Length: 569
Image (cartoon, rainbow, N blue to C red; front, side, top):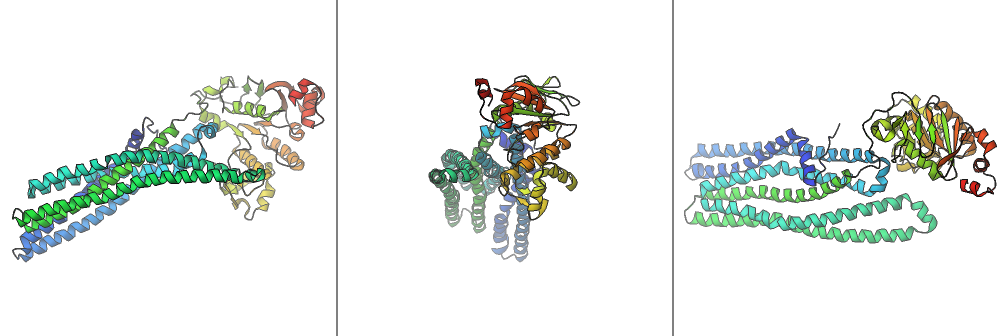
């Protein structure tokens, strides 16, 4: 389902956008919430009539009739409460999942820029904590609207009993809300600081968990553990600050309406003792004041939820305003397979051929691949069309960059290899075979149905590399750009992968960055890069004969003797 285009101008506008995305459900929730709260005022009225019209004069039929009315409205209220809760649950779930969708979709738009612009911990905090707070804020559209209407109805009913009591209610309820205003302002400030610190600490925890083996190896585990401990203590202190404000809001939210109830009841009791109102009207006033606690509490809780929702929405808006490094345009890509050319390096990728990039500095080859994939700004052309003018979605459909840092999500091995596709076992098997990964399938207890941990932590480095390669081959893009696809496997496995890769990608353009002679010998064209630019091009054997720097690099012989060769090295 398309979540739509969120309004990113402010936190309030984002919440209003969520409301506008489900107007029918919001209207039903507001109607049910209003009907439920208004119907809560009917039992006190019916009870007063039962006392004044039935109990006091001894009129049994009237007493029975008004009693039946109390029971009937009680049953109606129960049904309204159930339907209101169901509707508002749907409203909250829609808002939460819609927020998660827009966050995930924007994360995919950011692409390679995502880890440079925001931490993983912050994304997780937004996707779980902030989405839930935003969803809770939308509760104000149901009971919140009903609370205002119920307040007006109760004031009108009290006006029929006593103008003085009506004036107390009309002035007292807004006063209660005003008294909590400063606390809600303090809560927004404390909550904002807490959420920011929480995101930072979650990112630090992710870094520690991801690099735990390295930290153990260099003896840095205790240092980072102490930093995390201090950060956790700071977060706890900020949590205490949020909790202190929250406790006052909840205490006053319950206590002030109760005090208000007592004041109204005391005033009504004095008026009944003086004969200004009847006994039934005294009971009604008590009931009205008691019912009024519900909308007043809902207004206070709604303000509390809205305050927290605005804090969460600001974090979401901040994330949604991040821009990718390359935004792209709306031009159409080439209609058929075409050459991909990088003028900075001089590399040109011909359709249907296996091309290899060789460089003494892996970063130079990686930079070329990033430009060819459209992940960094450049003047790369595809069939004569500048790549940065083409719709990036259509670029991603036909050009795939596969690197050794690509994420492996938790799931079965079949799902990890399949990615977003839904292939049959035969297609998965072909990709696994081409990546020389059959031994991984055989070695796991349930084969393709075996569970893979996040980032493939229950696999070795070489196994993870082959799983990533199998996933890329299964995607079968028009142009596959693979960064060091065999760097973590042994020579026998590498030789087999080289042969199978060429067969699996026959008729498709494939680019690999490597210094492995086993892969280079299979390439149709090899580009030898020096300082990020093409120093020579040809097939592997030709470059071995004619370029000593290339020969020393790929054969791993002794160090080159000339300065230019050392630079190439």
